[in-house]
Image (cartoon, rainbow, N blue to C red; front, side, top):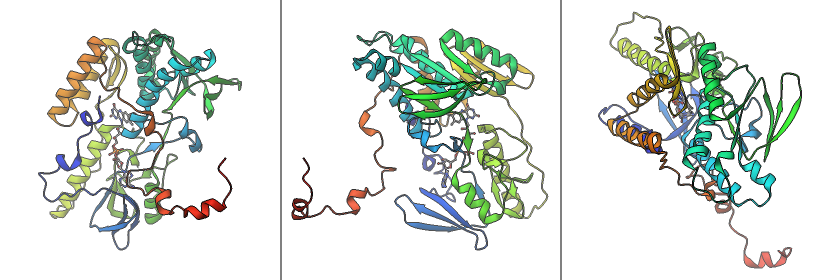
Length: 403
Ligand SMILES: Cc1cc2nc3c(=O)[nH]c(=O)nc-3n(C[C@H](O)[C@H](O)[C@H](O)COP(=O)(O)OP(=O)(O)OC[C@H]3O[C@@H](n4cnc5c(N)ncnc54)[C@H](O)[C@@H]3O)c2cc1C
């Protein structure tokens, strides 16, 4: 689907609320004594905002477990930019394979490695095999897209382990049926251009030639969590998330709440329901206090269950005692994900796009260019060449020749 069908502009969603303002800027620090948030406009200018109550909900980002250098060859799946980069790399890999003369190179481009067999890794693995065996099946003349190998690596013993053994087994069978090669008990120790190094449980290292690596193995809090912890003395868990009280505030700072993925409380999972319920709770709490009602109830999470997509017609759903896999699981997954999209237009658009993809193998959103790769960090950053004026022609004439 196109990004516009998934993400609605916050300004549009909130335009009815005249007391809400949206600001495009990155929060970089907090002055908790002066009660000010310090931010940078995109491009660098500093701006500040005062507050009475502060809610911080900056989410999490991909973690490479101390190996951020892997990110260059193994994009994560956390932002819209990530998703677009992944789409470009997946479809791009088939194009590269198509023009490769060397059979080794061709094989490498037709091999995809997924690091992490959680919901995102499993879904991506299934999707790549579906694209290869259905969407692209009849489009290439020099390669057989269905030859594409998808290798799924995880240090644990089974895919979708958080869903429990029964659903995990269903996921395992569904992945096998799709042709995904599962390497459980395997830790990816190195990623470089064209390959990954993998250590199995016996400690044996194996190198796999892969043209495309996608990383979905872990998450960590963004740098702003560190700034908040420094400013408030808040403690953080191993992933850098802020430990909060039962009312979701930072100990000693009842005026600062941390919510959603960035909060650490009673091992609650990083899912949308936790983020939405914690947002509702904090909003109500602040509103009640502003109206003089100081009585407080702790945050209580109502677990509505979780769902993971594997491929067309296959998903797993776990809700209370209910464990559903296969086609029924997929129908429930579909209903939940359409119901929770923002805006009726997005819901209708999603229904239509998915209908075409599921019934006729048509995927419309396949436009990409290779020139978009690694340009500026963001569109308002001034490129280095514009900051440093080019030397005059006579200076160049004195320098070494360009030959
Ligand atoms: C690929 C993928 C699939 C998922 N699928 C599901 C699913 O099927 N079901 C489910 O329940 N959950 C799912 N999740 C998890 C769900 O998206 C998160 O739990 C939820 O979005 C968390 O909400 P949040 O508000 O805490 O953080 P986010 O939604 O991550 O929002 C945080 C926002 O803060 C902004 N931000 C970060 N740092 C700063 C800063 N310094 N200054 C200003 N802004 C900043 C970010 O740009 C972002 O917009 C999925 C997540 C991913 C990545």
